[in-house]
Image 1 (cartoon, rainbow, N blue to C red):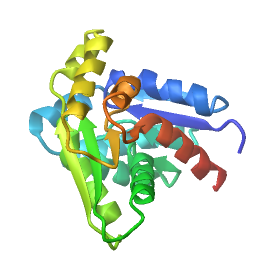
Image 2: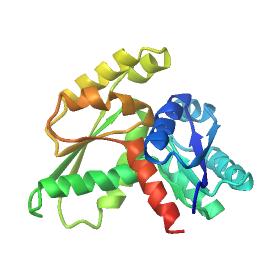
Image 3: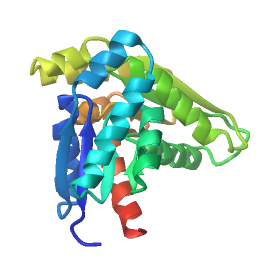
Length: 230
């Protein structure tokens, strides 16, 4: 399939530029349609958990994307795993969770670093949106359940970083993330949870020796591969 139309569905405007940048770098031929409902993140933060109404809103967004001709969907909001699964089931077109590909790559990197099954894998998760940690932990645990080894996920929330980015203070945002990752336990690989964190990867990588992964790049590569197999 050449030049497919891809819907990028966002729950915060902060995710738009990072994922579009990744597409320009890794899959410039894709035709992108950005769809934003920035009330979703605010509503989740206020309630503290996914509701049936939020799930329906995700389904509505995905069905709209399909109706206007999108052939694939990438959600960029990391705290809504269950809702994204429901949306994917409702449309039947290739749909990717924001962190699905990054999780897979992190496991591959960690297993390569520790090839012996008796060694526990230690994977770091750095988030600037606190509500995403629990939902991402559930997704990650489900993904690693079949592995015949111990996998430890070390999660940390970096407060005020997202707020700094929203105010245009990108340098402070990146520095807060770098400090957060530097103070984490030693891990085999680190993951930056939010799409909006991607630009902090360069500075964060200077603080640790293990690889630091970003979700937009991983997701773009994975969706491109999935679309080829359709």
